[in-house]
Length: 270
Image (cartoon, helix red, strand yellow):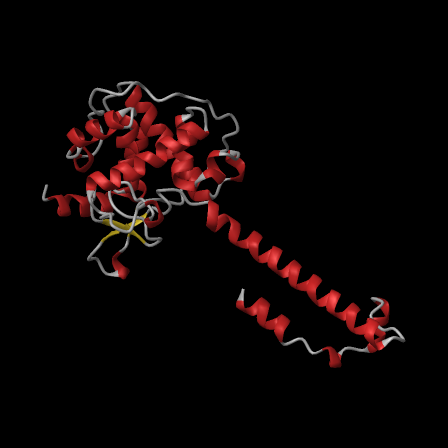
């Protein structure tokens, strides 16, 4: 952005061949008219620059949900020791996204979730009940977002168990408090469910990529959101089916989730 604006500010009209101005109709016999035309030209260029910069900024403004970034670290961890929670796995071309309503609230979570997420099972069940959500959906998000680490902070600033961005909190709230973090994160998930008409899979995408994802098509999602969708969809389907294990969760761990889970285990003392 700086380079683009600097290049515009350094433009010197005196160095341009006047024949070039004739081609744009900028040279007239009337000096006042010439100034007016040049002013219109300058304002038009400025307007185009403003529109271009707005379009460049748009994905950043609306393309991040509560779980905006998957690169998590503990609050007191050095910046050089960031653990990767998402990977560059091969993308799956998905064109037919099936709408699936969340299961009725109540019950526990699948046994295959990692011990760090199982640690929070009583709270997960409580939070799910408070928000009329399936506990397995809540556990799926916690698994991918933080692996149960209440102190997790991403490089993008997302915080806590559900990796909620700071703008979802009020100024007086403790963003890392588990109950507060869960309330804000699951409020956002419910917003996504209302927006998608109960499509839990699109809502997972929206949790990561915001309304630009839940209101758009798979092919137009950011790569991170496509991967997030695949992980969440596979884990949640396995949990909903009553499976004893989840190949998708194991693949997520192998693809980069294990270090973050080890960090979570250390912070939880398990």
